[in-house]
Image 1 (tube, rainbow, N blue to C red):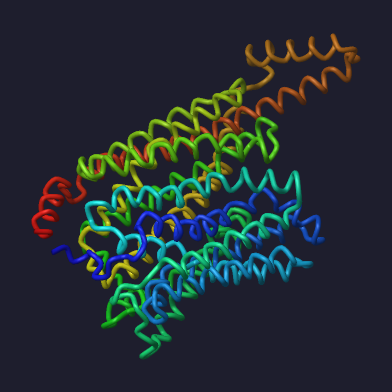
Image 2: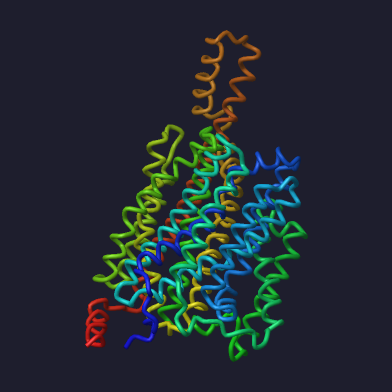
Length: 526
């Protein structure tokens, strides 16, 4: 019999359990991106600068990143259901406090609590779903998890922009309260712990391991979130946190590998199916969060979209994911996961490649189609990667494995955002310098464009002397605009090449034959 089958048959329908636990996780993942477009409103209301208001995001991500990998250990100490309900209750209460905050310091502190409480929701949700379904049905079940993890960050900026523009930023947090209360009640009513997930109690505390992980991951998240703003290692602030992160994380790995029962079981990564899946879900996070960050910045900075319209560029892609996720969930029962992962990577690569060819004439509908092409491969990544990751994980290790898996995805998102935003800024400078060198007054193309701008200005009543300056200014503005488009195109090309390469790497993943596994499951049932 498969070692990962739960020894306790759920009292309620597993699909209901999956939807209930996903409700809480969806709420938490949504909050990782929903405040992005509201920072200027928050800063204005609380009398803070734009730079200071970014700590509203950083504080949440730091706390979230610290708790995520520890959630498996905390589930073992408290019991999985109790820990999950504690996370829901803490997240809901912190959300209410965030909405009631009347100062930036208070809001940042409440966001820290919200991040600590929410950090355990994603991995615990996945562990509950793993135990609720037999192995042959997990692929379809992971489709629900995929909707939570992929659609929530896509819809976050759209929903945040709409709420901020039409109500107030406080409602971004207040809306979590009724959802959290409902999820808390339903989880308490429907979810039950199998014997291996009940509370083991706190026999001893690995203070060294906990301290190294908390310091290392916290410093790493601050470095990633603030790096571009502080000019990376040219800043002593970023350099200090980079050194702390490197030293603590290396020491943590050495320490954890020498523990009999570590708070994070890194030995699970030695299993090829799990270790390679964590690498693949890391790059899935890079693709998801990198694209979700770049496209709104592009349409707002270069095409004049407001926050709501920029969010609406992403939303149709989220709907496409919702429709394709059930298909991916069904296919994983018939097609080896590595082929589906290769297909998903190839589709994402094609979408990124298509996006790099935008121009000054690209309109809203084209941006929407580009975004759909970017994310259409994600269902064929998340579901089969999740299925492959947990196929050889013993049931008693499911919570700790889920914590590492969720950390890999979120870390991929953080590194992806930091990488692509820094890449764009540096390429904007190099592209602008290149265009300026090849666009001088002696150039025929320059003279032709300058004459067109000059004629346009004078036709609208401008005096000749002023018209020359205005035309020159427009020429420079157009040069900057073209440099920006080329820089964003370079970033999308980088992601395209990365995902295309991983499409070939995916073929090296372990082969899970779904037909053989179904036959084995049927034989064990008899």
